[in-house]
Image (cartoon, rainbow, N blue to C red; front, side):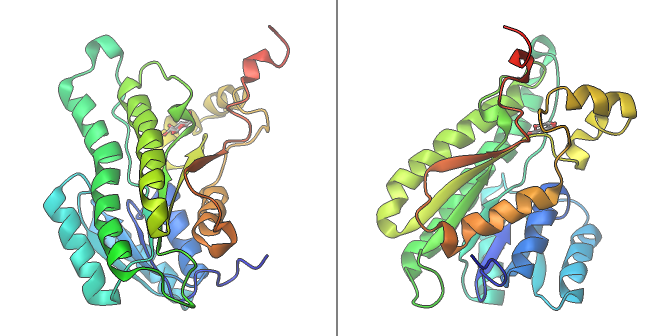
Length: 269
Ligand code: BGC
């Protein structure tokens, strides 16, 4: 299996690509030969740093600002992608956030913000990408599929999470969005797959790893006894988007060091 340049000549749009897992995925896809759109909603300079890092490696990237939960922003982002690169082959629905609260105190705003960005954002971006995949179809020598959609989910699509019901609900929703799109779009040769990371060392979960006490508590939940790195997820994303994974659609890969193995039962139960 040769993943080096396995995405050669393809266009990848990665949402939330200015930090954390999205940044890692964008860099890895560029390294695999894709031209990458770095979507971001925060400071442009930060996204531009990722672009510069990719270009310094001799690869190609471009930053586009868009709020994935805003329909007009999403449509404008795809239009700008086509103006610059002509088409799109790979969508990585990665943008996501947490707004944690005890359930009884959770505000409607906290609920809506998380559902809008984590779930509705994946719907809006997938719908735009799908229009282009269907319009263009399979192109010989480019990829066996007409398009690939990767949905960044979480172990919390199956692990309930007290204090984070908005986040867990968004991730459970992503699972059925992903599977239902996969079922509907397979006849168009569009593949859709989910990625379910466990604890990955990124800004979203900094309090869970940035002190030795927090990290050792976190590691009790991870049988493989290490926190994940964005690169762990990035390698999986490149493979799932490549023709090496051409028969994979409608399923999720858990990449969590065993977090979903009910570690509390290892010496109990
Ligand atoms: C969350 C992290 C958390 C991890 C494992 C992720 O989806 O964003 O904050 O550390 O799941 O619980």
